[in-house]
Picture 1 (tube, rainbow, N blue to C red):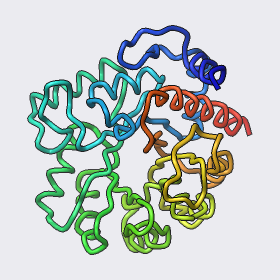
Picture 2 (picture 1 turned 60 degrees about the vertical axis):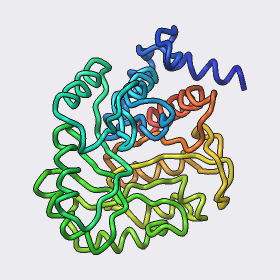
Picture 3 (picture 1 turned 90 degrees about the vertical axis):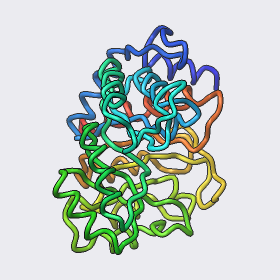
Length: 295
């Protein structure tokens, strides 16, 4: 295992330069080539704020860059930086927001998604969320809104040019079944779709590949996960390709669908091996996408 960890790290880069993340922010040439392959597929690999929930947003940006990733899904309730009381949300003032943008720009990381964020029946509250995302340049809000609120939310999507991707937490949450997500999307614009969380499907006993087939044409973004067990609510995250998630088949299915989307690396599991696990996920994604882009 130690050898695998070292190899995964070397695939990403060679030297240590970030005290908080123990990885270089300069990915290897091989990883840069893999990013080019991913762009050909229309896929963007992103860090996930929730994965780095034990640290601040600023530290999460550093860790994302250290993994060689250019994109980030922002976590709504994460503090901006050490000593700050401000969450990454609509309550943030414009001066702090400018500081956030500079942090992202300096790190070479683009915020592309925001979630999981609550959206409900109060249009004024929802509008504040959309306005915050517009200011930050976010493309997609990941949420689990009540079905009866989707008509008004869809209008905001059109007005702001921002999509809403319906996320599936595990059973018994409202959207654990892909059929429920599909029903909620019916009659809505193309800006209302699914944030497909493969790990939560696994915890609910739903086969990810079959779920993706059902949602074809409505998938907006991905929370890609691999778990140690299938059908176990207590299953935990493992590096992609080492668990029961059949990630190779998942990616092949998404290529078949010609999906163009953000793939966020989300880990429910935290601990001292987190960065090593994430490095292995990135290396796996690089290998798989290189193979798929060549087909």
